[in-house]
Image (cartoon, rainbow, N blue to C red; front, side, top):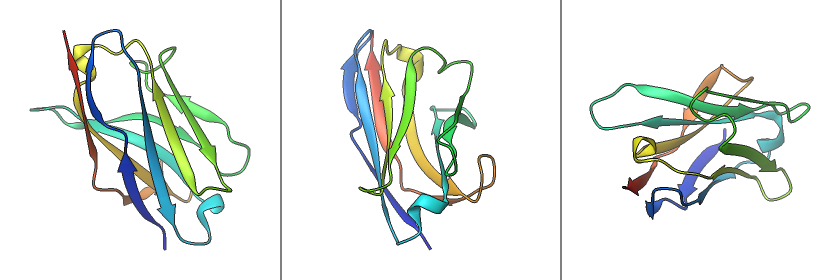
Length: 118
């Protein structure tokens, strides 16, 4: 079983950047697809992006395309979410997730708060 711990959240001005990290424990990290979701105040949790375990292919929500990049370092058991050109509407708690494939999420981290000021 993999356990996930997010870090890197914080307060940033609109137009700025943040990089979130998700450290995974467990020996089989490389066998899991990894992803990021977010939940904004008063809204449903939404998919941000994911990366496969097999070939590192990625997919993103429309809101993230062109601004966010997911990457993974299997040697460090870590997945990253690089967020550029941040907007106030990106303010949310960001959650790391893992699953047997992109879309089959079943392990979740505690979340890290990202606040973008205008």
